[in-house]
Image 1 (cartoon, rainbow, N blue to C red):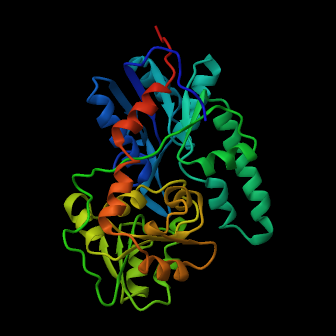
Image 2 (image 1 turned 30 degrees about the vertical axis):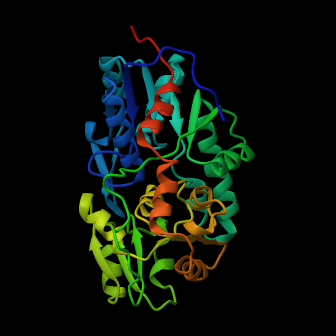
Image 3 (image 1 turned 180 degrees about the horizontal axis):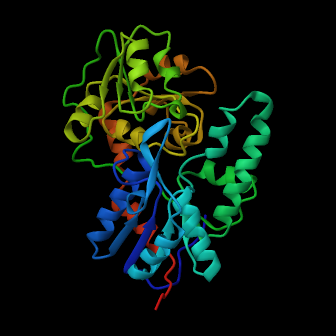
Length: 354
């Protein structure tokens, strides 16, 4: 884990992110909360996202738009803002344009490892190509992040995986936070019959959502979220309640009304929804992947994880000991947005663009 920078604390912070604008996902929510905490400390933060450029929607992801040929306009935007520190959030077209701008000029920058794209690609190509695809994508990611002065990672397990894959840049653990005024247990929780299983997140292939929808368990299944697979899955799984995207109080109530939170993803590096669920008093059922395993550790009161059998994890989570209030308190003791923002701010690198 890397130490904090000795450079002055930056007052003008530029975040360049391919995930921004109208997108609803963990990356966007992470930076929204960090920015709010920094602005409360009178730090000026500017985000450059795809909406600042000519862009094109992904054919299979209409709500995700990518910047087209962003290099020249990006240069103008960076130099007009004259930041003290630059953070590149995502390894997309904007991220790479910012990477080239900084490396060509010797300007230091930080990055963050939010999504295991190598694993994601490997799971979706023919099996005989998966190893080659994973190594190839990891080589690209390694080049991107090794040029940074600091890579923010969410968990110890992700950090170790990156080290094992040849990442040499300093790394700093950047956890996530929860709004505890919004996410808290129901005053008098009572198990539903049949139990209610909840999924919150994008309704998309990379989330492995069908592992949740096909669980052989007598339960009411609820899906909160939007995404490209939503129309198809609504038709294919008529017994499942699809609410669409929820935010604020409606989202918090969805957590409180459930009995177990199910997290089927195998490629997320953390999952803010996991700690929102725990703060709301829910036990978690998940695969043994870096996000859930680092968050839950070996604490059986927080739920259950399994290498391959998600249904078994759900059954054990339904039987988990520990009260909803206990889960809330354990989460509150560990996850705080102001502390996350503090770690982020202290590890940015100041650079004069005068």
